[in-house]
Image 1 (cartoon, helix red, strand yellow):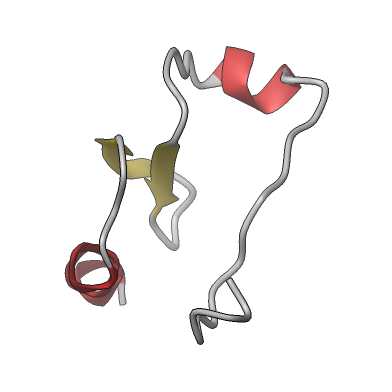
Image 2: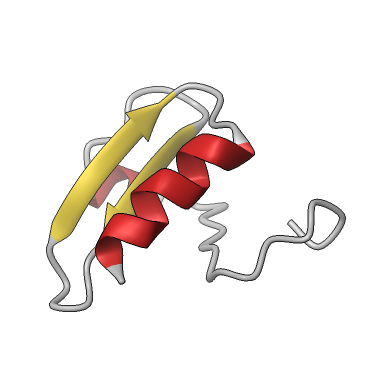
Length: 60
């Protein structure tokens, strides 16, 4: 994330507890949470910088 110049929170989940709670079945999966704590979007598979920007812009 640092090498790519991204400035957003990222959760690492080595034991898989969060992945299980959100029913993540594939890696990579990005789960985007809105400011109210609701799942706003789920992106399964590789995510480009443009896709990240589009999704996160909608959450601001």
